[in-house]
Length: 429
Ligand code: HOZ
Image (cartoon, rainbow, N blue to C red):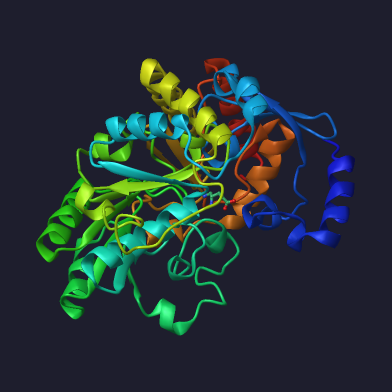
């Protein structure tokens, strides 16, 4: 596949933008090639600036649950644009989406809209600290909660991909309030509580880890987190920026049947626009300004165009529960096909799937922990990625990211990808 225009654009981009990209995970650096510049998308497909067509398994890193450029996202948008794009004053659509979110997530009695997942998690932690009057938080190694200082400690996603799980520029003072535990290991959490009695404001966790590839939660671990945080008066925050409205309409908390104290959302709730949200129990959320002393604000928070696109998406998902059944069926098909190909080719690889989220790890160890994730052969992933890209499959350019599918992907798309997967794995033998 030729990508001359992409290559030229990248050379130009590198002159003005650090690494030529506006978010590191887009750089394709870890798969040792220049990034693909996208021209347009439709349904399950994206088309690059050279005219190459791909089936998209990134889906903008999760938001596009209905595929690219679905008319659902755009309903009423021309009219909304004509009225003006931002006012810095409340609009009716903000109330509508807040109502819908709180109905879908009973644990979120109140919600505040922001413009990204990073803002959502950063703000949720401030609220938890304000509410409890404590400073320390617990996060898990390999979990990624955006790029605010205190959360860039032993993080996932791009930080893992580029080997900087703890970012430079984070002060020791900030980092010392972030305690790091082991995902799926309750004893590691108990030990931190024992070492820091009465000091832990919040435990923040991805209820299904999706930023170190995909690691499914051990249900007893998650239930244990709920119990210990309840016992210790610590705020349990589910970071559902990825899993919210994706695993199920009610997110991972509905699937796992666990009620956190606070939840962060993003991605899908914006219908492709930059939106995040944090919310939780009323008594906790009433600490947020102007009701309480925890300050949080944003010029474009609750932007009416973004809210309308989010509302369109969420309303559609509420009214079409078959979307979730379809996503899971397609993910199961992908899982079964990949497993069969691994068996036939003898390549050392594992498939992890949780509901509609999937990941293929190049390791011979079952992947149920960060430690197992880290045994993956990233060189093998690079070769695999390139072969899949040339066959027309747009996979995440990193071993440590999830495969996302959308309602627009068909069974035939998945079957073609399984066939391409076989050929790509053969090249690794
Ligand atoms: N970190 C997100 C994927 N796990 C994508 C957002 C980004 O970093 O660009």
